[in-house]
Image 1 (cartoon, rainbow, N blue to C red):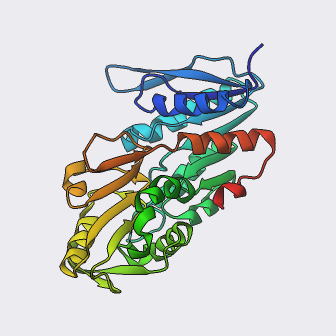
Image 2 (image 1 turned 120 degrees about the vertical axis):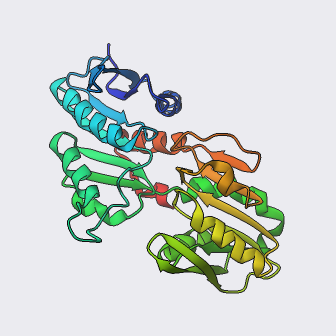
Length: 317
């Protein structure tokens, strides 16, 4: 007899390991979950054709979408696979985005540009019943979705991994946001970690995209600093924040983010820090200063709660 729930992923993509880790964790709690594959055929002209390898009729499907894919391919596969899931008579379709691509394009910031996060939401709403993601860049994009949108917090998991490292000298630790927009994020992390002092970085620019300098509002002299962000893209702002903290006499500097794009390379960012924690929502190359935090167990916990009628809000505590 088929399991009631199916965890699905592109079996030929790097993200399949993330889906397998979710399934392994779920299998410890229930036999109701099956791991199913999706085979994506690519034609010589670049067209793509996904095929679901499991029987989905009448079953709830949790599609673990590979965040490592090129954004254009990621979006195309999302649309095509959701269509295939719907045509396969799935009872319910939940799109699981370890990292929600296009979420930074959440507003019209100049003339004649799309609100791309809204486009993603409409594509999901055409076929799926909900989205499950982690630390989305702007939680307000929930408003773009007609379907259910669950945004998991990374902080409880991250704090469990990070806190033991500072246990002996937590009183000397300061939490820092590299910009004003991340202030609430830093405050939330500090509260969970049990740290009282939070400082904020302020960037100065001569033109869009170019950071001239970064100033810190708050005292960091002689203190250990943990810089918190949500996404590491090129990492330029984080490096500037690290440099500014060192100029002001910071003792040791650490960093954390759940999503690591590292578009200029891991070493370009991490070498500036004494240690850096990053989530595994995207595959990461190894570095002696980089520690990867696994989030598959958090997603497994969320999926188990969703299927057993338990509250997801307890994961926020």
